[in-house]
Image (tube, rainbow, N blue to C red; front, side, top):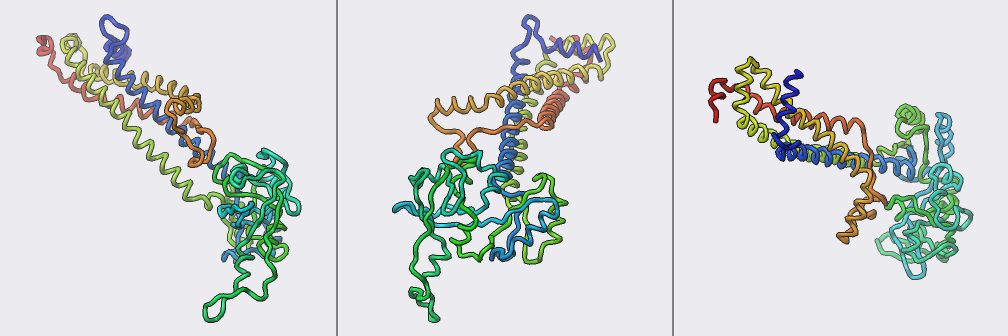
Length: 422
């Protein structure tokens, strides 16, 4: 084996130069293929992990809602069940509302009514405050930086909130289908709130839509009964390992309530991310496959160039298996060298990914990673050791298999004919 390995390494080098151009191009092909695979899979994994992290930060680990979306009149019963099981829970009020700032109307926002202390403990909202403070007293709201720019307001500004429940209550439908002003409705006035804080949690879709108010204010705006909630947010010890806890709570909840985990709430998104990662690997592995074919062509040329040397080896007693092993080891060495260089290059690109992205954006004048579409301010990446090992192993195997055809061709050479080769 040592002799075959020595000859394989010797055949990778030309007579005068340390590394031949053909060998260098073969190694370069494998290097680029491995590096591209590493970078893409690391970015896809980082994107998925960061997305999960942001989802857990901005949502409950699991939620309890009414099966018919009618709201929960007495949430304390469900809260006591959750806390008895070893988790924490808090009633919340969530609903789309119409926001008015001056003459500007915004229909894209969702009111999140909650206890101020729960927002501090569970959603870490206080860490995302950019201006003002986290205060949800009577008639106070905390909005995002996107909303502040969209509504042209700041800390201390006033905004008006209109709820669908109050607006629809102004209209009365007659039995014949016609409409009239509801005679039982009182004079309508929107609810006025003061902006006490401006936040950003770094997740674009959340920042664009969610603003916070006290749960009592939110319930009053939506004409909910006193103490009612639209959902119960729950947090367990571990958001990624809560199957037993969830099943235990589900078994004790009344039949009118349903429990959904954050994975179930975002099942479609998480499924798409998993499929994208698998498809990217499947497509990009063809880069390494092309490099393996180039190794096949390189070694076929090498076999013809070294026909007489192969004849001498076989005349001296080298077996067909030994000759085969020499050229298979050439492909193996190219795979190992290319994978090693590709892994190093991949680590460097991943480490400097944001610098590279910003530089390319400056050169092209185009934003390569718009946070409006991808929800994050920077390009995430997470290197998984298992992914790297799988990429390297796949590359080495493909390169070794790529050398098998020329190796078998060399093993079948007749020594007498090979020695006569000119």
